Amino acid sequence: MGMRRTSVARAALVAAAIAAVGQSAQARADTRVTRDATAGSYVRYDGGSDATMLSCSTGRRTQNEPSVAVDPRNSAIVVAGSNDYCAEIQNGSGNVWAGYYRSTDGGATWANSLVPGYPVDTSAAGAASPTRGSCAAAGDPTQAFDGDGRLFYGFICFNRAKPTNGSVYVATYDQDGARYLRTVRVDRGTPSVWGLFQDKINVTADQRSGNVYVLWAQFPGQSSNNTLHFSRSTDHGQTFSKPIHITQGLSEEQFADATVGPDGTLYVTYRTIAHQSSTADAIWLVRSTDGGLSWSAPRLVASIRPFDSTQFSGSGADTCGDGPFACPSGLTFARFSSQSAAAADATGVHVVYSAETAGGQAKIFVRNSPDGLTWPSPPMTLDTAPTGHQFFPDIASGGGTISVVFQDSRSDAAYSPSLPPGNTAAGANSGNVVHAILARSTDGISWTEQQLSTAGSNPNWEVRGSVRSPFFGDYNYASAAGSTVRAVWSDSRDLVPGSDPRETGADDDADGFDGFQTCSWVPNDIDAPAYSSPTIADACLSQGALDQNIYIAP
Image 1: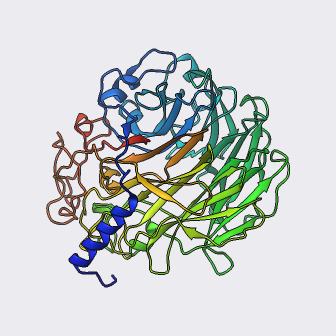
Image 2 (image 1 turned 45 degrees about the vertical axis):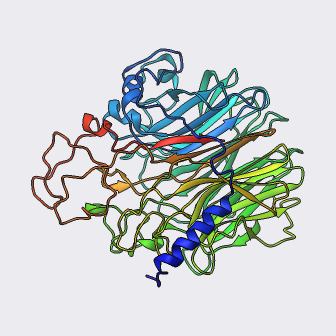
Image 3 (image 1 turned 180 degrees about the horizontal axis):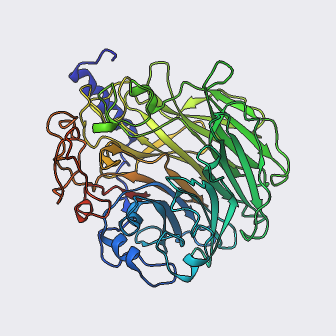
């Protein structure tokens, strides 16, 4: 652990950092997207209901990894998605599904649903979905509108046990996202646990040509040299081209993010991860000027010092919790990692990414290019806030303004470069100290910031792994249509704190990250022979201990 500043000095730094956000921090209230504490709030795609919709409406389960898309034909229509764990109540297996949420009033109110094809979906669309009988868990949502009101929703679907079948899919909705049409499998994973696994999907659409582009990482079994793969649809999501790889696969390649410029140029940014001396932690970009038929060689955007959760565990683990999920460091934290995102406009392409400074603080960096091939100016940070970690950036451009959303712990009095966000040096909960921030710029160089979240979060609440391990998702999302910008993020403000009765001194029972409610199961210590946990459908888990939600602004 590094040397800690005095509390007086730290308080002054935190106050200065908060002031730097600006007086407009609370200019507009944020809105909760996932209404899972209101009877009847979840409705099936066809307007009907079933047991899953009923339990999702009041289940108060976890939602994370949000996506959002603003309709370019009507900016009052906004569609969002998430990993929605409400489906686990009926399927009983702990499996997540892809949530589908739609607003017709700019995000003020929402209709909640799931993409058809969830495990106990007996509707006509559910029976027709290619996910039926192939995979049980769906996540990694990504969304984009074309110029004619079609919404393309990409996701992965897999099994947690053999056969894994990790595949990528795209669901299509028309009528400005109001009507579900179909789900198509873009690329298939192989059944073997050491076979091909398709992961980390990203979808974008060319609003001029109508082409739909899909990017994802293909994991080839035990090898770390995964590659980024690409497919496209030229018939509005009915069929997709044979996948090709667009990178060299010389390192682990992850977190592809695609954007289309006004002239139709397709840009894809991604991160490489160092595993041996021949590989490096870096941000890259490739581009295509012919709709994905051919690609440029990868161009280095920046070499980075990564901000990855693995550095805080003491064992290389990316997530640390209680009981069997405890780490040598004694800290509790959800998975996070450095990743990049891109937006293109009339001035060129803008890439943002999270990385550490030389002093160990995680910041959001930006680099601008007129064409994706040359990078005239060096990377710069969006702000100079002296404290707090910044992570999970996404970027959108519209109406002459570039917007970047990210999570920020600058209000954390316990902040230290040697600690993950939301932890004290003793490994305890430092409070709801993480906020969603939006940075804006008209030139990609000068930025102003606005705090989006009206209440803080802590990403480290233990919401999975028999409620002993945290998870906050892997990203935020932003979308722009003209001057309308909407940003979404995972938020834990509604989670109900509690005390885990399984912890009687042998575990991390004083860390303050438990949200457990009193349940009808045997509350023995994790090390005791009679230890048991509630089943995933137990009503005690619907009392608020898992109530992580998706919020939207501005």
